[in-house]
Each structure stands twice: as C-alpha cells, then as structure tokens.
Image 1: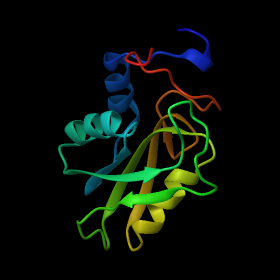
Image 2: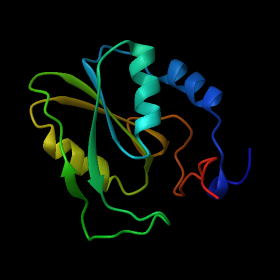
Image 3: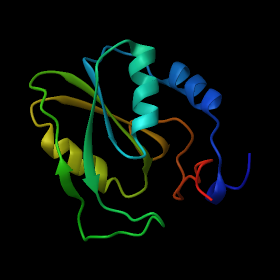
Image 4: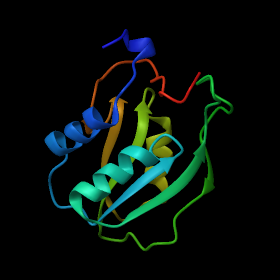
Length: 137
C-alpha cells in the first residue's frame, strides 16, 4: 500500500473488508453522498438490505471545510424510527458529518462505518488523512 495520505483502495479489498467487518442485524444502509455511496452499496449488497442516501455538504474536493458545521442538503424519505441503521461515509476524520447525519436519524439505532478514520467500523483505519480515489487525478 502507498502512504496513508495517498492511499488507493481497490474495490476487491473494500468488499473483502466489508465481508470481514460488517456483521449484525441491520434494517437499512444509508450512505452519505458522495464518498459514502460506494461502501454503502457494497454493505447493502453484502447484507441484502435496502440502501438509501443523504447529502451533506461540509468539505470541498481538496478536503477543506466549506462551512463551520456540516449542512444537510437532502435527507431521506424513509421512516427510520426504531430501525437499526448502518450509516456509511468514506472518511471519518472529525466525525462532524456522521454526527450531522445521525441528528437527522433520531429514533434509530445508528452504527457508523467509514472506509478509513474513526467510526464504529473502520474498514482501513483509523488514520487522520483522506483517501485518494483512483478516479481523482
């Protein structure tokens, strides 16, 4: 693997980590757009449960904060009361985006998952830097 600040995660490795680390009984997977969509999709397929997404704006393409606190752009329509939700994002550095998403999911039991960083489940971490996706040049 390359250094952590320029780590490339291959799809096969991500799916293997999902299969190894994601278990339990969840009712739904919710991915935070954009970076959380791919790992959320993989988890949803692995667990064979519904997938939804929400959009929260916080960082720019260079991973710098755009605002002081994350802003909900689009929530979800599904009723999450009493459900166990797997909430997925790409990187969990400060936890601010995951906390903002969890605020919108009151009444649900939340388990967080990130590709890398700090969460209940971290596929490749924790560390405090962002992932360079293969399509980022």
